[in-house]
Image: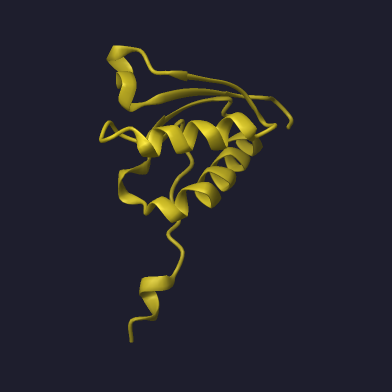
Length: 95
């Protein structure tokens, strides 16, 4: 009856990932899958939005991204793209 609750959600792969709707425990696997999917379709610069909040999720996301060999650069987004509540991530082609 409630089996649909655990079904995966299929999202279109775009150059922006808003983490507001995800649970913190989902973030590592989500980032891994998202980065792989972006590289597969040729998206090499993305904006990831952890939000402003306390900054804990952003710090965790940055830590995950900095360890990922497919990531070339992680930087805070400019003010017009979300400022300190968003990250600009450059991915390596063919990683």
